[in-house]
Image: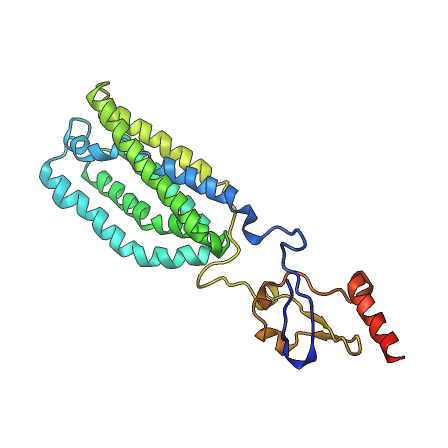
Length: 280
C-alpha cells in the first residue's frame, strides 16, 4: 500500500504489517479470552445461590426472617455501595488481574462461610465478602479491553458476557434439577458452588498481566509511536519524524519503513537509472 500526495516533495513507500507477513496486534487475543471465559463460567456456576434464603431460614443456619431480611441482606447492599468506587479505582491502578483474584478469593470465603459459619454476626461478615464479590465484577468485564486490540472489542465482549450468562443459567438449572429430581440437600449444593468458585480462582492465575489501564497506566509515546524514515528521492537523504507524514492517512499504523538502501527495491533502482540516462 503506497502513501501518495505527501507534502514537502517527499515520496515514501509505507509498508503495513500484512505486507511483511507480520502478525497483527490482536493475534494473541484467543488465549486470554478463553481463560477469562472459563473463569467467568465457573465463577457464576453457583447452583446453591437461588436457594440462599431457604438455606438461611432452614435448619442449617436457623435464622429468622427478620434477621435475614432486615439485618443480613442490607449488609450486602451497603457493602456493595461503599466498595464500588474504591474498587473501581483500585481495578485500574492494579491493572485488573489482582482484583479478579480478589473476587475469586472472596467467592471462596463467601461459600466457605456459608457452609460452616454459625450465628448472625458471622453471616453478616459473609454478606460483606459477597459485597466485595459483586463490587469487583468490574474487573472481569474490563480486563479484556487492556489485552486485545480495539478491533476485537465487540467479539471478546460477546464471548465474556456469554460465558458469565451461561454459567448463571447452568448453575440455576442444575441446582433446581438436583433439588427437585435428585433430592439433594442445600448443603450439598453449596459444596458444589464452593468447588466451582475454587476452580475459577485457580483459572484466574493463568490470566496474563496487562501492561496498560484506562487512567493510571498509559503506554508512553516512545512505545506507541514508530520511528519514521523517509528517503528524499532528490538527494537520497533520510528525514526522521517529518511533520508532513502526520498528514498522511494511516501513518500511525506503519510497522516498517523504507530501507535506507534503495538497492533493496530493484524497481526504484531502475527508475533512478533511467532518469540518469535521460539527462544525457
